[in-house]
Amino acid sequence: MMLALASRNIWRNKRRTLLTLTAMVVSSSLLILALGVFSGMLDDMLSAATEQYRGHIVISVPGYQQDREMFAAFAPDADLIADLGKRREILGISPRLRGFGLLSHAHSTYPAELLGVRPNDERQVTNLADHLVAGSYPAPQAQSEALLGRELAKKLGVMPGDELVFVTQAADGSIGNDLLTVTGIFATGDAVHDNNLVLVPLPWLQRVLVMEGQVHELAMRIEHPRDAGGMANQLNTSLPAKLAATAWGALMPELQEAILSFDASRLVVATILYLATGLGILNTFYMSVMERTREFGVLMALGMRCWQIRMLVLTETLIMGLVALTVGCGLGGLMTMYMQRVGIDLSEHLTPITYAGSTILPRLHAANELGNYLLPAALMLIIAVLAGWLPARRAARLQPAAALRED
Image 1 (cartoon, rainbow, N blue to C red):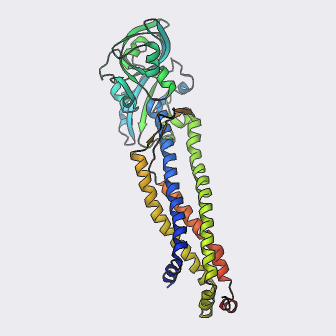
Image 2 (cartoon, rainbow, N blue to C red):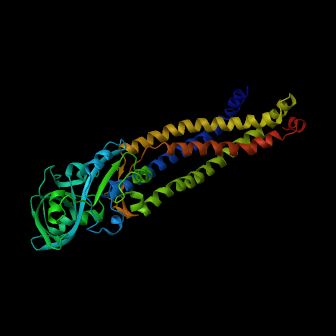
Image 3 (spheres, rainbow, N blue to C red):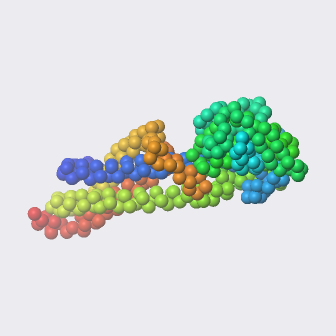
């Protein structure tokens, strides 16, 4: 009976109810879309920082990630790599050697970071192959091929097929130098990578640096990047004492703080938006209670208790909240899916922004995450019930005799 009475009372004034429902639906759907776009921006930042260069987790000699000391290298154990590869959550492992030196072409010379990799392994960890603007990705059996950033290529004046001279100090104190052939050029939008980074074959760099069989790190890509911290701690319990696993959050604490602050930020945004919606719900039910004062008096005279009157009004607000939530989640989900698949490209009007060690790309696209629905849903129901509490309390405190005399 309570549900039947509540449903009937909601639609007694259809215009007012529809206006309130519209405000609730619009606020919840727009909030879901906004949270989805915000999640998409954070995913872009995380992807730019980890999947273009660093990886989600790196295994190296303790301290190497801080000072990049050339001699902090190790010989990768085949059994260790095989054991890591058996883990379902690890999607790729790439051994790397890092070197710094000078690249020259014709009359141009610039400093650069050379990252020695196995091309097939590196493609499983980073996505530079998806950012090619000229040429091709190095072949699996490449001998002396180079993939470099677009800005560095412009400064050197090279195109695919041109030769480069690399000069550096080798591990034995000698001067290491050799020729490289440009096979491709990438553009990530990250100024640091596009201006300095060069991918070269791992055996070639090991030979030039006189570090045969040595690497500086094992970079890994995992299934759930935001769980990298816990997984790194788990790996550290089984790694040899001379090695340590470091998650992207420890390498880029500013980015980790930016992502962790997202939960607090979206709670603040959701609360502000729903407080305005709550005022509309409060107004609707106060008007409804005032119009039905005589009806409440009749119900109480017939034996309905105060708590039942209160529950009746709260049931009405809860029904409206559930209806608005169902429609709002559906509409918000559709808009989020559209932004996820299509998005809005702003590259013609904006340039990439470097923030917290990562790059915010000039585009709007959404990420479909469960949390972006649960927060608006929970807050909508809470705000609806709170907004209905004052009208319900007023209705429950009515005196039957006085209520029956109301016009």
